[in-house]
Length: 287
Image (cartoon, rainbow, N blue to C red; front, side):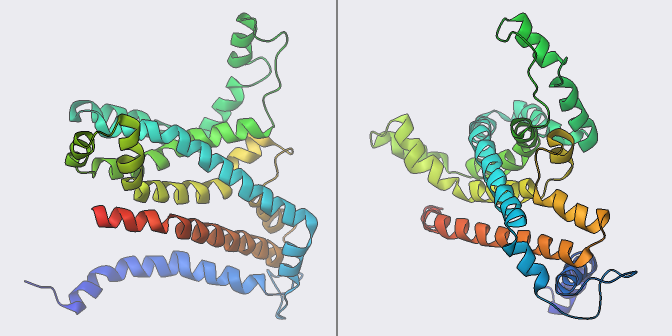
């Protein structure tokens, strides 16, 4: 029995209402705010202007921060993908008996609060922390390294927490591959690496694309980890936006910076999708 359109609409109405109230309205308000002039005693004035966007894209400092944020996001996404794909392959091939255990290990970083996780990293890599003590004991260094407040520790900490967001969609794509394709590849004389390049990797593209997009968006919008582990040395667009909104109460300009980051993110994701489209079509023909 087919459900009526009215019944379907009624079932989906609460979800649509939540999305409208908590996503569409705030986002629309931010767009409007980004085109307004600043005001004293109010979030923004009544006049309209393009000066906020002119400053966001024209000022070398803010443009540099924007490009640096996108570059850091791309670096984090690439490292997360390289680390996550072998884990996803193992998780996809492991028996059901051990699947739950390894699944719990993968998602374990998400079970710890963001502040606790970052303070844990601060303790581990501090000047007198366990990592420096181990390196000194092994004779690999002569004096403790200053590992805090630089880009590598920020990248490592973010890769650590973003691995589950990459592993899970890739694992799902790998588990959906028909095992008979591997037998067919072997029967045609293909070796292991040839099967990977011609069968496994192309058919896992949907999961890779989903993980890459998700991790990239999360990486460029990260705030707590760059602030705590990067300090004043690592400036990303998220911290600049918060500074403008809360620090100096320049809401229109802060909204314009946030929109600039959103626009560049949409462009980057769109370009990635266009690049991956041929592989997606190939995957659809094989499915």
